[in-house]
Length: 349
Ligand SMILES: Cc1ncc(COP(=O)(O)O)c(C=O)c1O
Image 1 (cartoon, rainbow, N blue to C red):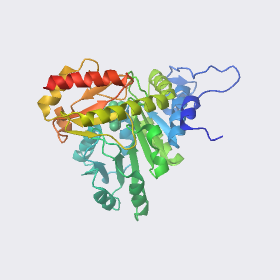
Image 2 (cartoon, rainbow, N blue to C red; image 1 turned 90 degrees about the vertical axis):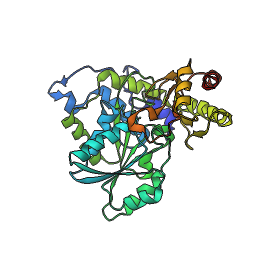
Image 3 (spheres, helix red, strand yellow; image 1 turned 135 degrees about the vertical axis):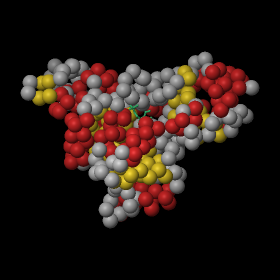
């Protein structure tokens, strides 16, 4: 049967023998007889990997964090390779590549994610296109299918990797759009409860998956048993959480667009729980954050609880407009969220 993503999120990765427990056990072990957990994995990791791999349509490998997964993807490249990245993108990834460039390991070419022509031209020369769509924090969307087609048409096709953290496999499946590797910070929407750090890659081929697994064996960024178990539990409810935050976010976007203190609102066409909205300046945005009573002024995102952060306050995201706020919409009542937003906007004056 062709079960829907919602059904597969609930059921994939379970044992289905007679008398098996409903959930895979937490396997807290460093070795399983002659097998060593860092090299061979455990049943808990595999259940999580099976479920994410099933939803993304590829071969998944779990890592200790999203950054662990990102490092493994860049590890696929030989010394001196050129990576093209979006200028607006997750700051930790850019930090890792700054280091790789300074130490002479990789060449990095940042391009505006909105400049599709520049990306199409770069696809011919690059060794890897690193896409993020929607981008963190500005929520720009990139034409994944167009870029993978351009990459495939190059004489020496670059690998195309996509950070799919914001869209989740419910929003889009980049492998089906021609990408080679997908990466998630499962810390965010997949885990969904702000109670763990975890990452995952999903490769389009068994060969790439083996290379990524080998990077995990060498680098040692292995998932914790409890984290992998919790992330799988989070994944079971991802479809309903994603639908709920998408509905609430769409409602809040409408209201934000009508509010006189809000100068700009950005919301991805594919939905999701992330909104970017802009107030007049940094002081107004800081006053807004200080005035919140329900929504947490906090970093990170994708949890059950709503959070807001002014990313331009961080040197790594100084390119973002000073009054822009990244809003991670949670599972609270939309009317309560709007009541908190409006009272905090009153605070701004
Ligand atoms: C889009 C995106 N990718 C990757 C990461 C890194 O993931 P982690 O913090 O789990 O290492 C983050 C973290 O904020 C993120 O937002």
